[in-house]
Image 1: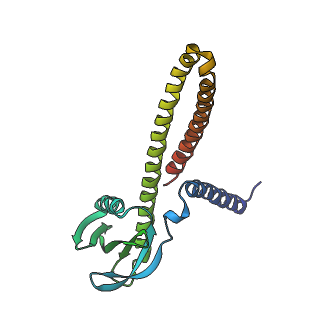
Image 2: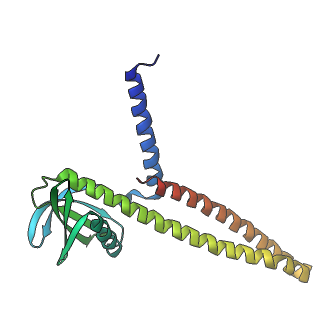
Image 3: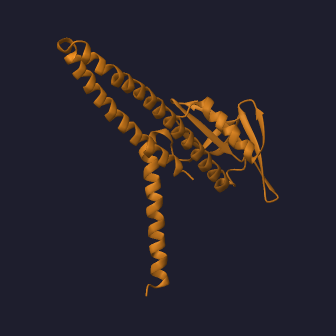
Length: 213
Protein backbone atom coordinates (compact mmCIF):
# COMPACT_ATOMS: atom_id res chain seq x y z
CA UNK A 1 0.00 0.00 0.00
CA UNK A 2 1.31 3.47 -0.90
CA UNK A 3 2.07 5.60 2.16
CA UNK A 4 0.46 9.04 2.55
CA UNK A 5 3.93 10.63 2.29
CA UNK A 6 4.58 8.99 -1.10
CA UNK A 7 1.11 10.06 -2.32
CA UNK A 8 1.91 13.65 -1.27
CA UNK A 9 5.27 13.57 -3.09
CA UNK A 10 3.58 12.12 -6.19
CA UNK A 11 0.94 14.88 -6.09
CA UNK A 12 3.65 17.57 -5.86
CA UNK A 13 5.53 16.06 -8.83
CA UNK A 14 2.35 15.94 -10.94
CA UNK A 15 1.45 19.52 -9.95
CA UNK A 16 4.85 20.93 -10.96
CA UNK A 17 4.89 18.83 -14.14
CA UNK A 18 1.50 20.28 -15.20
CA UNK A 19 2.59 23.80 -14.29
CA UNK A 20 5.81 23.45 -16.32
CA UNK A 21 3.81 22.14 -19.30
CA UNK A 22 1.45 25.14 -19.16
CA UNK A 23 4.39 27.54 -18.76
CA UNK A 24 6.15 25.91 -21.71
CA UNK A 25 3.01 26.39 -23.85
CA UNK A 26 2.88 30.10 -23.02
CA UNK A 27 6.66 30.58 -23.46
CA UNK A 28 6.58 28.89 -26.86
CA UNK A 29 4.10 31.49 -28.14
CA UNK A 30 5.22 34.56 -26.19
CA UNK A 31 8.96 35.29 -26.55
CA UNK A 32 10.63 36.06 -23.21
CA UNK A 33 11.64 39.47 -24.54
CA UNK A 34 7.95 40.54 -24.56
CA UNK A 35 7.63 40.60 -20.73
CA UNK A 36 10.33 41.16 -18.11
CA UNK A 37 10.40 39.85 -14.57
CA UNK A 38 8.76 41.93 -11.82
CA UNK A 39 11.49 43.95 -10.11
CA UNK A 40 11.89 46.46 -7.25
CA UNK A 41 13.12 49.93 -8.23
CA UNK A 42 12.80 53.57 -7.19
CA UNK A 43 10.60 55.68 -9.44
CA UNK A 44 9.46 59.28 -9.59
CA UNK A 45 5.77 59.82 -8.79
CA UNK A 46 4.90 63.53 -9.17
CA UNK A 47 8.42 64.68 -8.22
CA UNK A 48 8.67 62.25 -5.27
CA UNK A 49 10.84 59.12 -5.38
CA UNK A 50 9.24 55.93 -4.02
CA UNK A 51 10.14 52.28 -3.86
CA UNK A 52 7.99 50.48 -6.38
CA UNK A 53 7.50 47.22 -8.22
CA UNK A 54 7.63 47.29 -11.99
CA UNK A 55 7.89 45.24 -15.14
CA UNK A 56 8.56 46.23 -18.75
CA UNK A 57 6.93 44.84 -21.86
CA UNK A 58 6.69 45.36 -25.61
CA UNK A 59 2.96 46.10 -25.50
CA UNK A 60 2.36 49.63 -26.85
CA UNK A 61 1.76 52.20 -24.10
CA UNK A 62 -1.70 53.17 -25.39
CA UNK A 63 -2.92 49.54 -25.36
CA UNK A 64 -1.38 48.86 -21.94
CA UNK A 65 -3.00 51.99 -20.45
CA UNK A 66 -6.41 51.00 -21.82
CA UNK A 67 -6.14 47.45 -20.39
CA UNK A 68 -4.86 48.83 -17.06
CA UNK A 69 -7.83 51.17 -16.61
CA UNK A 70 -10.28 48.34 -17.38
CA UNK A 71 -8.47 46.11 -14.87
CA UNK A 72 -8.39 48.78 -12.14
CA UNK A 73 -12.07 49.66 -12.59
CA UNK A 74 -12.93 46.08 -11.66
CA UNK A 75 -10.93 46.38 -8.43
CA UNK A 76 -11.87 49.80 -7.03
CA UNK A 77 -12.11 53.53 -7.54
CA UNK A 78 -9.51 55.21 -9.74
CA UNK A 79 -8.31 58.79 -10.08
CA UNK A 80 -6.08 60.37 -12.72
CA UNK A 81 -3.59 63.00 -11.63
CA UNK A 82 -1.26 64.22 -14.38
CA UNK A 83 0.42 61.00 -15.57
CA UNK A 84 -0.28 59.07 -12.36
CA UNK A 85 -3.16 56.65 -11.89
CA UNK A 86 -4.36 56.16 -8.28
CA UNK A 87 -6.52 53.26 -7.17
CA UNK A 88 -8.18 52.58 -3.82
CA UNK A 89 -8.81 48.84 -3.45
CA UNK A 90 -11.37 47.82 -0.80
CA UNK A 91 -11.10 44.26 0.48
CA UNK A 92 -12.40 42.62 3.68
CA UNK A 93 -13.00 45.95 5.37
CA UNK A 94 -9.50 47.21 4.56
CA UNK A 95 -8.35 49.63 1.87
CA UNK A 96 -5.14 49.73 -0.12
CA UNK A 97 -4.11 52.93 -1.90
CA UNK A 98 -1.74 52.42 -4.82
CA UNK A 99 -0.24 54.78 -7.36
CA UNK A 100 0.73 53.66 -10.86
CA UNK A 101 2.97 55.24 -13.46
CA UNK A 102 3.24 54.03 -17.05
CA UNK A 103 6.16 55.27 -19.16
CA UNK A 104 8.02 54.48 -22.37
CA UNK A 105 11.71 53.67 -21.93
CA UNK A 106 14.27 51.99 -24.20
CA UNK A 107 11.63 51.00 -26.77
CA UNK A 108 9.51 49.27 -24.12
CA UNK A 109 6.58 50.21 -21.88
CA UNK A 110 7.15 50.15 -18.13
CA UNK A 111 4.52 50.03 -15.39
CA UNK A 112 5.52 51.09 -11.87
CA UNK A 113 3.28 50.55 -8.82
CA UNK A 114 3.89 51.88 -5.29
CA UNK A 115 2.00 52.03 -1.99
CA UNK A 116 3.95 55.16 -0.90
CA UNK A 117 5.02 53.14 2.18
CA UNK A 118 8.37 51.60 1.21
CA UNK A 119 6.53 48.57 -0.22
CA UNK A 120 5.00 47.39 3.04
CA UNK A 121 2.33 45.84 0.78
CA UNK A 122 4.83 44.24 -1.59
CA UNK A 123 3.06 40.88 -1.76
CA UNK A 124 -0.29 42.45 -2.70
CA UNK A 125 1.34 44.67 -5.35
CA UNK A 126 3.26 41.71 -6.80
CA UNK A 127 0.05 39.65 -7.03
CA UNK A 128 -1.63 42.62 -8.71
CA UNK A 129 1.13 42.89 -11.33
CA UNK A 130 1.16 39.13 -11.94
CA UNK A 131 -2.61 39.27 -12.60
CA UNK A 132 -2.15 42.22 -14.94
CA UNK A 133 0.67 40.46 -16.80
CA UNK A 134 -1.70 37.56 -17.46
CA UNK A 135 -4.28 39.97 -18.89
CA UNK A 136 -1.63 41.39 -21.23
CA UNK A 137 -0.47 37.88 -22.20
CA UNK A 138 -4.04 37.01 -23.19
CA UNK A 139 -4.27 40.26 -25.14
CA UNK A 140 -0.99 39.48 -26.93
CA UNK A 141 -2.10 35.93 -27.84
CA UNK A 142 -5.62 37.02 -28.80
CA UNK A 143 -4.24 39.60 -31.25
CA UNK A 144 -1.91 36.92 -32.65
CA UNK A 145 -4.87 34.54 -33.09
CA UNK A 146 -6.74 37.24 -35.04
CA UNK A 147 -3.70 37.74 -37.29
CA UNK A 148 -3.44 33.98 -37.99
CA UNK A 149 -7.17 33.78 -38.77
CA UNK A 150 -6.83 36.74 -41.14
CA UNK A 151 -3.95 35.00 -42.98
CA UNK A 152 -5.97 31.77 -43.19
CA UNK A 153 -8.84 33.65 -44.87
CA UNK A 154 -6.44 35.24 -47.39
CA UNK A 155 -4.83 31.89 -48.28
CA UNK A 156 -8.25 30.22 -48.51
CA UNK A 157 -9.33 32.89 -50.98
CA UNK A 158 -6.15 32.47 -53.08
CA UNK A 159 -6.46 28.69 -53.04
CA UNK A 160 -10.11 28.71 -54.10
CA UNK A 161 -9.33 31.07 -56.99
CA UNK A 162 -6.56 28.73 -58.25
CA UNK A 163 -8.84 25.69 -57.95
CA UNK A 164 -11.55 27.47 -59.96
CA UNK A 165 -9.26 28.80 -62.72
CA UNK A 166 -6.75 26.01 -63.30
CA UNK A 167 -8.98 23.49 -65.11
CA UNK A 168 -10.12 26.31 -67.41
CA UNK A 169 -6.50 27.20 -68.19
CA UNK A 170 -5.74 23.60 -69.14
CA UNK A 171 -8.80 23.29 -71.41
CA UNK A 172 -8.06 26.53 -73.32
CA UNK A 173 -4.72 25.58 -74.88
CA UNK A 174 -2.71 22.61 -73.65
CA UNK A 175 0.58 23.62 -75.24
CA UNK A 176 0.54 27.17 -73.83
CA UNK A 177 -1.14 26.67 -70.48
CA UNK A 178 0.55 23.39 -69.52
CA UNK A 179 3.40 25.13 -67.66
CA UNK A 180 1.06 27.68 -66.13
CA UNK A 181 -1.13 24.81 -64.92
CA UNK A 182 1.87 23.11 -63.32
CA UNK A 183 3.04 26.31 -61.63
CA UNK A 184 -0.39 26.99 -60.24
CA UNK A 185 -0.78 23.40 -59.04
CA UNK A 186 2.58 23.72 -57.27
CA UNK A 187 1.44 27.02 -55.75
CA UNK A 188 -1.81 25.39 -54.64
CA UNK A 189 0.14 22.66 -52.82
CA UNK A 190 2.39 25.29 -51.22
CA UNK A 191 -0.66 27.25 -50.11
CA UNK A 192 -2.20 24.08 -48.70
CA UNK A 193 0.98 23.37 -46.72
CA UNK A 194 1.03 26.98 -45.47
CA UNK A 195 -2.64 26.69 -44.53
CA UNK A 196 -2.06 23.47 -42.58
CA UNK A 197 0.85 25.13 -40.76
CA UNK A 198 -1.31 28.15 -39.92
CA UNK A 199 -4.10 25.92 -38.56
CA UNK A 200 -1.55 24.06 -36.47
CA UNK A 201 -0.14 27.37 -35.16
CA UNK A 202 -3.67 28.62 -34.46
CA UNK A 203 -4.51 25.50 -32.44
CA UNK A 204 -1.30 25.72 -30.39
CA UNK A 205 -1.80 29.45 -29.74
CA UNK A 206 -5.38 28.89 -28.56
CA UNK A 207 -4.12 26.20 -26.17
CA UNK A 208 -1.52 28.65 -24.81
CA UNK A 209 -4.24 31.32 -24.44
CA UNK A 210 -6.54 28.92 -22.54
CA UNK A 211 -3.70 27.82 -20.27
CA UNK A 212 -3.34 31.34 -18.78
CA UNK A 213 -5.35 31.24 -15.54
